[in-house]
Image 1 (cartoon, protein in one colour):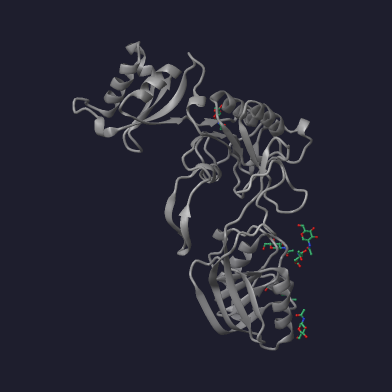
Image 2: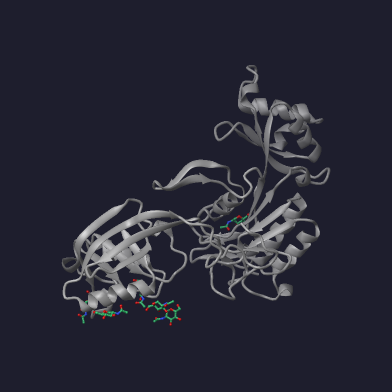
Length: 421
Ligand SMILES: *[C@@H]1O[C@H](CO)[C@@H](O)[C@H](O)[C@H]1NC(C)=O
Ligand SMILES: *[C@@H]1O[C@H](CO)[C@@H](O)[C@H](O)[C@H]1NC(C)=O
Ligand SMILES: *[C@@H]1O[C@H](CO)[C@@H](O)[C@H](O)[C@H]1NC(C)=O
Ligand SMILES: *[C@@H]1O[C@H](CO)[C@@H](O)[C@H](O)[C@H]1NC(C)=O
Ligand SMILES: *[C@@H]1O[C@H](CO)[C@@H](O)[C@H](O)[C@H]1NC(C)=O
Ligand SMILES: *[C@@H]1O[C@H](CO)[C@@H](O)[C@H](O)[C@H]1NC(C)=O
């Protein structure tokens, strides 16, 4: 069954079910069962005598295989560029022999794609997805790196907020199970595919399941994720799920008490822009613009008396060119549409008003200041009253403020069994 109420959690429009392994022992399949593994080898140990990489990998597999005739069948791919290694179908004892071999560097669990339920319900994979485990829009990569991303030193947001990025458990092993699919009109997920993925993960012996997906609010007995999580928890697997994308009351999903339900967190930095109006009023807002821009004594434009202009849906470049343009809150998340209009009309800086909590940094490709309704009303009031409104000075962004950990007003964790991150 395709659940149209399925939601993509954490911004991006594709659903992934992500599970990660903390130890390989538990991940081994039952004896006799054959599974596909990606094995990375130490290339410095390649003997000169091997004519090709593939011939060398075949020799390695032959040395651990009691029946040499099967080697061609078990070697699925040989890799020479992305890494040195191969993908092979192995039994548990073959894998453990291989892992004791001096050439062995690492074993990666194969990723799985689950789309039978989606396809059976009439789902069609759209042009913005791959019909495979490969991640198209980055949601799976984003959630995996949040869980177990390696240390990446020297990162910054165009020079601001420098630091080291890393996941929660950088040394964990990851197995990803793709269950969400983009269609041409959006994206969808079948509850049956989630169940198949969780079933496979239990079989694979994962220690932790992390699901950044939600099927909406439903009684636990009617919620496939709650039911499957209970089975996983009973087997000693730690299950953590996303609480949702909305920081509003009564919007929590995946709230079953055996699930550790984690709410959206934030970073310990604020991106601040400062504005001083011609009447001396000072205001602060948010600005993600990657370069610091300073303007002083510039005309402030507001399309008062014309809703289309006030909301920056259609501006006249003769009126706004070179000015700082103030756009009214159009009560939608579509600041991007306003930014494009303001930029296209030749303004130098834009001031936008929204109460939306999740501003997308990549939207702000134009020097801009984002205000809440309250500050927006002050600017509007000033422009309405003044015959020639001006911006005395404005710097975006002015500062990156390293804030103290602040749980009040920022949701770090939802109640379930609470995980403080
Ligand atoms: C996608 O892959 C599945 C097998 O995983 C196949 O049954 C299906 O026909 C493929 N193509 C599309 C467009 O869904
Ligand atoms: C309001 O602005 C729009 C777009 O610039 C324009 O087409 C429209 O005529 C204006 N309306 C009035 C009443 O001036
Ligand atoms: C908000 O902006 C969008 C895009 O410009 C427009 O389609 C929509 O009608 C606007 N909403 C309001 C309330 O004006
Ligand atoms: C703003 O949007 C919300 C929901 O999208 C709606 O309930 C509300 O009536 C809107 N307000 C105005 C002034 O358009
Ligand atoms: C902010 O302003 C918009 C547009 O006037 C309005 O629809 C919305 O309800 C306001 N939100 C808050 C929290 O004041
Ligand atoms: C609006 O502006 C007038 C002066 O033009 C001022 O007296 C009034 O206090 C202002 N109101 C707000 C809410 O800022």
